[in-house]
Amino acid sequence: MKSLESLNKILENVLKKRAIILLSFLSKEYRTGMTNLIAFATHTFNKTCYVTLNDPYESIASRLDDEQKSRLFFIDCMTATIKTPETKENVVFVSSPHALTEMSIALKKVMEKGKIDFVIFDSISALLIYEQPLSVLKFVHSLILTSREADLGTSFVILKKDVSEQLMKDLAMFVDKIVEVV
Image (cartoon, rainbow, N blue to C red; front, side, top):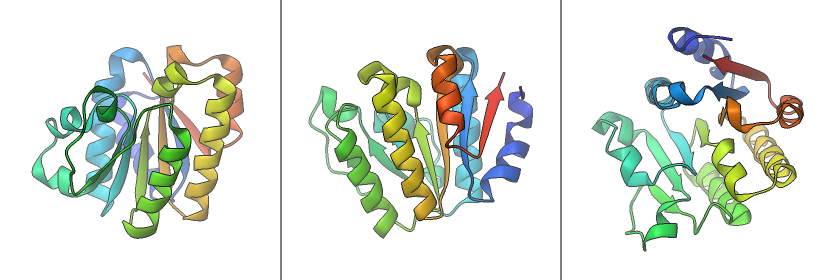
């Protein structure tokens, strides 16, 4: 278990190697942890793709400075569930968190033309609200294979309380490192 203070050192050691990691947060540390992860990614990489299943793009963007926004490309899986999204230059809107194929295609297109250096997937916990654990596992494995093929560092986020021991063991087979942040 690592503290939030040591998170940046871990990220620096692991993610610069283009590793695939699973960040497991306690619920109370989620927002702070995500803020740290975004700050690290936007400071370290030229362009990061942020896949959000938790918050709409506008909500996340309102917490970022202009420099951070310029270094992020978003795949927003929430906005279209509540309203018709306005076209944005750095955002692809997916119809819903249920649309796994659409999400996967959007990510592949972003990887192909966006010169992405890093991916943040926020979060497996949110995906588990919409899909069964086996479907989530298959989908995450597919995304990991896509990231490895593209030689992209990727961080999957999960809330510790939202995952069964079995699912955590299964995810551990696919990632390079699991980091539990307390």
